[in-house]
Image (cartoon, rainbow, N blue to C red; front, side):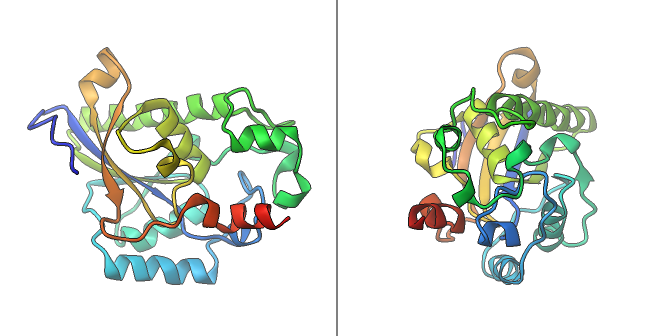
Length: 232
């Protein structure tokens, strides 16, 4: 059910978060953080089908991770718009685990990552807590720009781990935590941000609904990443 508790608040910003389309790295169940993997053929087909079947929001600006997969996704979901690149929306840096198959990373550290323990870190990479603060810094920049320019509706196209970090840090919702474990490819969430509160009181996203509305959302455990992990 849509949250209208903010009413006609002039400081209200609606943010539409989306994860990039299915990539070759996703299909191969690889730890692709900073690896600039592309949206795969199936990913392109899925994105176009979602766009043709369901309503995606009209926005005033699109922010994206620098990753090609995010820019490719934005070109389908928001055609004709020139996205604004935000460096801190890059996916988590997996360090020496980067681009490795999931079945090569079965150890205590991997389990801590699956459990999203904030102190989980990757050799020569970053920790979940570092990723959370980086992602929140990116959102603060977005919100600051929107507040200064009078923008009320924006989209953010980023990565599974980055979106998970943002939701873990700031989301206010009655939905189960498991619903935000891994955002399905090409899908996301609508939230409301009080831009004044963000700088003067607290940093919170008030959940509105899953996007696109009406689309069947695959479960995290059904993704190529997790299903391969279970098979191995």
